[in-house]
Length: 227
Image 1 (cartoon, rainbow, N blue to C red):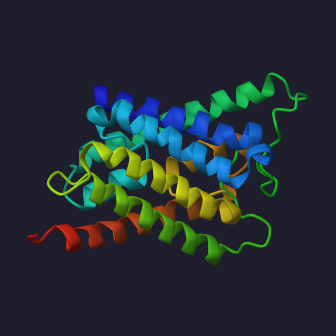
Image 2: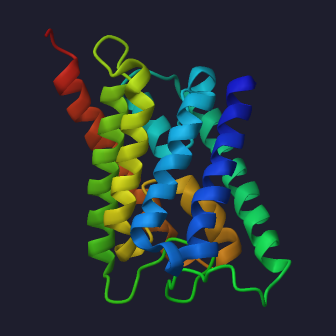
Image 3: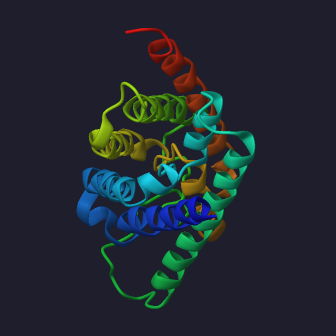
């Protein structure tokens, strides 16, 4: 149960702090600042709970571990449930925090086509196809980095957390202008519940899952053979 608790609390903090950076200070820190916050939160979590659960905090990552044979189906299901619960709690805490002082200027919220709490919805001018492609490709890159960096034999060892944090920051900088960047169905699910973002939720599931599958295939092709 310890690893499931770690996944839950880790995902809670990812939503609360990383999405919180966009909600409370979006226009003040800009896309670069928000991307940096996402990367730093995940970087910290990697070193905090990495040795407990592997620090997936993302259903797409857990599915990639399942696809590559590094996780069993039952364990993967437990991780995903824990991540969704953690994301819901994190978004609920963020909503409660904002609700305590609705007239206070926290730094502004990220403009996002009618949704709030940094929910993942299409930004003005973006299309469904554009968002699907962005989520698929960015998830592919992000999860491929995770799989390679954490490989038991040829991974990055203690530097894996740094590579993973940097990768999440990068994909957010690229993807936020399209749909606030998901690459993580749990990160999308929590804010969508409280922030009116369920309309585009399917994109934030399909894109990362497809990206996870592509990453798993390429990882196995690159790492399965001999050096």
